[in-house]
Image 1 (cartoon, rainbow over the protein chains, first blue to last red):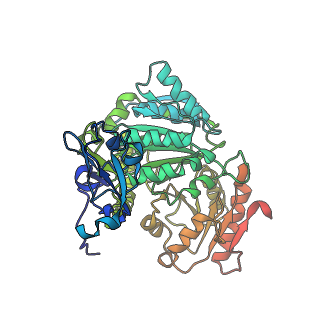
Image 2: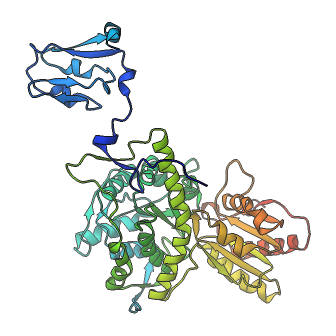
Length: 98
Length: 397
């Protein structure tokens, strides 16, 4: 058998660097709603980031910003936000953003 | 260099397993007790309690946790040990697949026992058969000395950098688990010496606190295919490795088991019996008796069940006039026993000869000398061109 496949894992066992490989799928395309932040309400408590299942909240120093390439739109961040700073909005409102 | 003569004792199979597991210096042990394995778990706990084993014992609430603990400890770099049987083995089914998928070199003893559905607290290989496609190396041994020696070899195999596979060591529940037999237990220094080559190998990847690494989590599309391909290729490599390790064991300790298979009086044999486990010992006695009667019969003891020892079996059985296979389990969906079905898959390479399937020894019913004698006679008759029955459930007749 002639292997044409380009090896994905550097190791014999399927280990990889999570920072590089974990988020390879563009799961953002699965989303029907996205969390939108009202920065005036956010107190930077970090609960949205702690609860986010795929860990796609990015720490911006005074607030958290969702990484839309990976956010599946589950809404847990908005549900857990004690300040109601996050609101889930339908993707249809953002179609012009491409 | 040769090993020193070990201490000779009379020991129960389960206690042998625990004593030798201790000598292999596992760092994490998680066993949930189950008949007929319980003495393994008890004795290991005793060793840690009395200070003769420096290991972390995790007292788990069931076998699923036992395997997950071993898996996690193994990917953190520890040498691990666990033991189970029957219901316990199937209760950890998802976890054993996880372990092999992660290529975690967990070593587990499985004391063969019948499986759920019919509550048989008795011997049989159905548990091992039920997990045969879980990606583990599966080895079956015949007696208490072989439990001791093979367990040491299992660590060499599992943790070998070229292999990196979990290994399941199977021995017959009740027959061996509770059998008191003379056993030579090697010296600690000799077990250390035999396992020492593992220390010279490259370090396998492991969980490092603080580092964002992942294992088994990126199996989408070609990641899955690649991981499975590597696993499949490692299983194939494991066959020769079993033979090599057996040879090195023989050179050092002076005992050999033939590696993937043991051939007994096969050189000039015209017909052959294939058996495994403790029944292979009985079969050797029958082969000797039948030889005296003038029947040129030999025995192939299948030690390596997964990966299937294709090349060795072909070499051993090619040209024989008929083969009888004794299975201690049922192959649901096939007429023949599981080992017989697999042998039939390589039949074209052996020759177009009768292969007779026998189901015997289920639920602690002995595979007796008369039973195997009957198998030899029928295989001998089939070799001479007589009609034969494709499958025989010996206890049902």
